[in-house]
Structure formats: structure tokens, C-alpha cells
Length: 137
Image 1 (cartoon, rainbow, N blue to C red):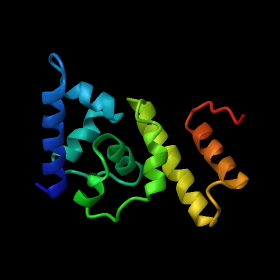
Image 2 (cartoon, one colour):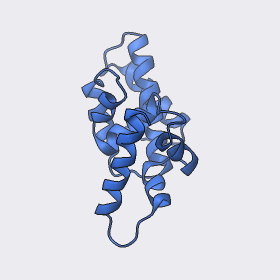
Image 3 (cartoon, rainbow, N blue to C red):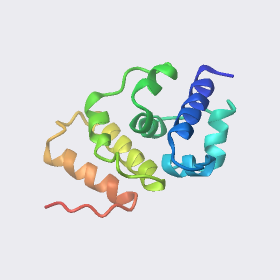
């Protein structure tokens, strides 16, 4: 098993021990926002998380996931932005991570200031693309 699959399986077991009652694997997958097939593939070393999946897992388990995967430390501003979605669970969580990740890539590619009007428009468009209704007010 890879370092990631070992770590991820341990994190699942740790999560499971902290849940009241009899939480199960499907509840874990639901909270992460990924299908059981995807989560099992990570656990059994068939695949590893990529891009927005890593961001989503970092929001759930902390930024250590980047180190476990041998990736550079994440942009602190990106992690801080995603932390505002900590209360979001299930598929919406993974979609929020994807929207934020894609917006961040585009903003960086265009070398925009994060607080610029153009960057804000990119963020709004990215979230709308994934079905989020965000007020621009």
C-alpha cells in the first residue's frame, strides 16, 4: 500500500471511532462528498486524489494530506477560502472544492489580484457553473 492509502485508511478508522452510534463507510463517503467507489479506490491504492479532491480532503482532514501525497504546501489563501465551506457536506462539498480550485487556477493564470473585480467575477462564474446560487451583493 502507498503512503497515502495507509494514511487515508487510518483517517477513516479515526473518523469512525469518533462518530456516535454506528456510523458506517457510506456515511463517511457522504460526508466527504465522493462516491464509495472513489473512496475505495483511494483506500485500495487504485488511484490517488487529484487537484480539487486534494483541496476537499484538506478541508476535512487538514493540510497534512498535501504532505502525505508529496505535494507542495497549498496556498494558504486557498485553504482559508475553502474553510468557509467547512459546514458543507456531501456532494456540495466536493463541488465547492472543484469550483474554488478552478477559479484559483484561472485567477493565477491571468495573474490577477485576488480582490480585483475580474477575479471576483471568475469566482462567481465558477461557483455558478457548479450549481451554486451566490449573491453578488
